[in-house]
Amino acid sequence: MRPLSRLLLAALTCSLAGGLAMPASGRAVPSVAAKVETPALYDDEAGGEANGDDPAIWVNPSDDDESVVIATAKKAGLFVYDLDGRQVQHLPAPAAPGPDDEVGRFNNVDVVYDFGRRDLAVVSDRGQDKLRIYAISNGRLTDVTDPAAPFVFNTTQQQVNDAETAYGLATWKDSTGTYALVSRRHKTSVGLVKLLSKPDGKIGYQLVRTLDLPTSFTLPNGRTWTPCLEPGVQPQVEGMVVDQEKDVLYAAQEDVGIWRMRADLTGTPTLVDKVREYGVPGTYDPVTDECTPGADPGYGGRHLTADAEGLTIYYRKDGKGYLLASSQGDSTFAAYRREGTNTYLGQFRVGDHDGIDGVEHSDGSTVLNVPLGDFDEGLFVAHDGENTPAEPDREITNFKFTPWEDIAEPLDLDVDTDGWDPRD
Image 1 (cartoon, rainbow, N blue to C red):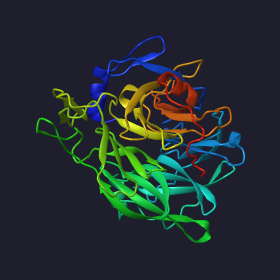
Image 2 (image 1 turned 90 degrees about the vertical axis):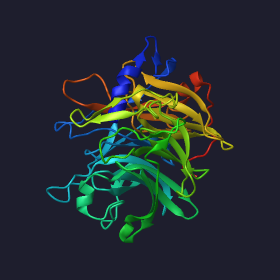
Image 3 (image 1 turned 180 degrees about the vertical axis):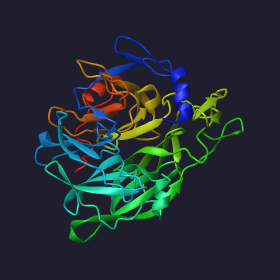
């Protein structure tokens, strides 16, 4: 969460009792319930510096009951969970290449099916500016990253140590190959990276091209607005998803909003929706590392409170479906139509229910229309950035599993298990 976002959040958000949340828009939104949660992750030395961030779902082609959720936990690497939320595997992040270098730090993950007859989990390693690639077999992961894999955006280790590294990630397949779309931390860049088969079953990659989103914006009053960040830092992208049937990439620029563009990074991006803080001037204070906001000129959106974060798509047949976005600043999720101009449809939050706490400050999320175990109509998995019960001086996160129909019903959305299947 960026400095200006933190300051505005306290002034803009509040809550209501009785299973409803009140986002900054002032409109009550329905609260749905998670049915499963994963064990708590602790971001301290005792907890292995495990800080949850982004999930992906792998569908077992032989038995959907044996499908798994793969989740990143920064310096702690990857955790793999069954559909009951139980941990079935842990894969640590790589050690630092040198005494003054950063250890591996796994940020985002996505799944690729049938790459050379293998399914893959592809991970952005923010600590070392690389992709880490794991083969999936029977729900267990094996590292198959090419040892000679290059940095994604940098050319030297010193540049990597400056932390402008691989950050957000989404995968995409078309007739020309299999790709990862990778954003760059502290920059507006998004890179198209092609996966490559290497000897001995290893997998490497090559950066094909990059696209830079804007750093500043012309407001309707003619003034130029730049999001308030610390000096030298640009408004970055993290949450991303590719519409696999339409070859369209959606990218959440955290302090700006959601962009739609061609997945091959050609053409001109379109801003689908803005965060509420769009256009608000701010003055950065280097002592507090925060921004003091000025007067709101009223040019922001109404559905997303910065940061705009995790994006995911629920596919329906005939090109229909829903784009879901994490509105991290007010701990809700916004739903848009997948087709057309991505019309806004409604908002929901994952709240407390039956001993499972709600989702707060969510980073990554994922949804599938595929029946999975007891989730007959599909599954939504979200990172919870503030898992409870709280413990003093410990940052605690985990992941919550919610049946799709429980989200669809209060928003009058459809359930459609005949839509695009990721295994196709």
